[in-house]
Structure formats: C-alpha cells, structure tokens
Length: 227
Image (cartoon, rainbow, N blue to C red):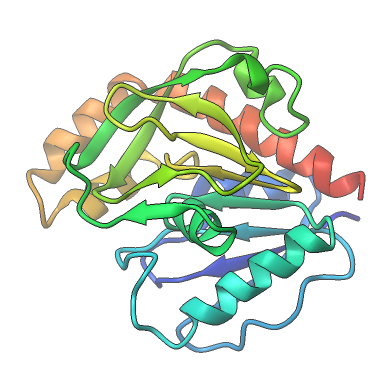
C-alpha cells in the first residue's frame, strides 16, 4: 500500500479533500504536526505532502529550517513531494528559489484561474490535471514565489502570480489549495471578510475545483505508488 507523510504546519489547515482522496484510494498517511512533532527523515518509501499555514516561508519557528532541510534531502533521494501554498513556498526557498512576503500583486483570496503551461502536459504528477485545461482553484495567500530554484520547471501560471505550480526534481509545488472546501475557505477568510460571501463564491465553482483537485491528487498517488 502506498504511504504519504503529511507535514502539517498549523492545526487549522488540514489535508481536507486531498486527505479524503488519499484515504479513498487506499493510501496510508502519517501526519507530522510541526508545532509539536519532530520533522524526521525522508521516508524510505512513499511520498511527502506539505500543507499550508498562516505563517510565511521565512518564519522564525523551530520547525522551518528542519522542514527545508528535509525537502532538500527528499529531492536528493528522489522522494515524491507535493507542496501546497506554504508548502510550495517552503519548497522553492529550500531549493534555492526566492519567496517574497507580502507580494506586490496583493492577496489572492477565493477562486483563481490556474493556466497550465506546455511543460505540464507530460508531467507525471500534474499531467492529468493539465489535461482538463485551465483550472479554477481556491487561493488564500499574500506571499509568492518570484524566482524558481535552479533547474526547476514552471508548470502553471496565473493572472496575478506568475508561479502557480513548478517542479524541481521529484517535487512539485502548487500555490493554490486543492484540498480546500467552500467551508474551509470560509473559515480562513473570516478574519479578512464575510465568510458567507466566500462560501457563495466557492460553491459556485466547486464542481470545477473538486474535479481539478482530484486529478492532481490522483497524479500524486500514482507517482508515490510507483516509487
């Protein structure tokens, strides 16, 4: 059975729909609560999923440096990694890219359109999602990757943020949140605006969000299972 180690930076940011899909596909998971648990070593089998959180990729928190070190070691050992939002930014920073806190493009909060680039078509993780065409996905961030790591490939872009997805070695980062339901988005949005309005906005596009997120998760599972 395939297995995924889930790195969770914050109690309020769970694996959501991605976790549900992993379970439905028979993938075992182990969650490392970064605020309480040690980071550990790259898994001998399976892959690593790095979730989001309200902190930034340069935060002065005890787990940030160990997570970046783990990501470097995972890529060196060809361990499949999927980084979501903060996970995407940590991955970029760890491998030599650049992340800007408080990006001049301003925050993305709500549905965004993710446009796949030609390189995504044959990518083993995102290829199935890219075959669906441009995706509408949830976003909740104000920071962004502005320079890719050396040797990385840009996989998807967006209107405000150029780097919406990239691959570096065995790892893929996505700036958006394929795991987030309308209700999860509303909970995150409550400190910024009307959560009911967010539910309405996300529910209107939820069929597309769900389809794209499932394709992305299925691609991750295939890569993990093939290891």
